[in-house]
Image (cartoon, rainbow, N blue to C red; front, side, top):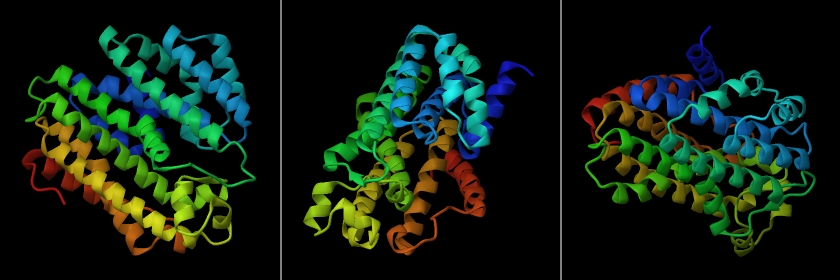
Length: 321
């Protein structure tokens, strides 16, 4: 099996939806986008591996960042592979394949490497900040304010939109009917929207793990606090609804981003996560996660329908809904 087959297999095992999107990307973008996703997923796996202590995960994240900057270190790889033991089969395969993925990253052209290292540095910073904020699973902690939540969403996702845009403009001089400077704020909002939707969808599970992403000052204004949410999460519903509206507004900017894109393959790759996020917001509005024990999840049929709609949107750029 060659390296391309291994990379495709890893992408398929850790994100089937993204794998379907990336397969249709132009060849000029496919390699960089795929490898960057695998590296970001690796750091996310390190950060989320609850079997390892927070201090261990922070140290391994720092070492992973050093490897990205200076090249693979067999010692650091060994530490990570021994101490980071994810439960998800695809993530286990990804940790095992770290040397290969790092090697593919090392073969990037200099400008691709520079852009991607800045992206991954932001992502690792956001993940490390997150671990420090929620270091005690026995006690519910909350982000202090709206700035902190938006900053986190930017570091782990908003900057991805900006990176995606810079990479695309480099390859396609007529990437958009807007200038790069005009498109960048929409790109950041698009990324933050996707992250906020994930945060809101996963909030019940996060609360059980001692993590509250709703800002503490807004909870206080609503007459509650993070500690009270373990007994009755529904008291945070007004704050939750406000951030649902914020995510929706960011998705509207994401829609404007997609409309401005010219290459149909890239438009398809952007449309799929945008549409799935819109559907997830609609599901949460119908059955608020804080009021229900049932996990919000887009159905397989919805995913298939989104892929078909994505092809229509890609070729026609019809008004997105």
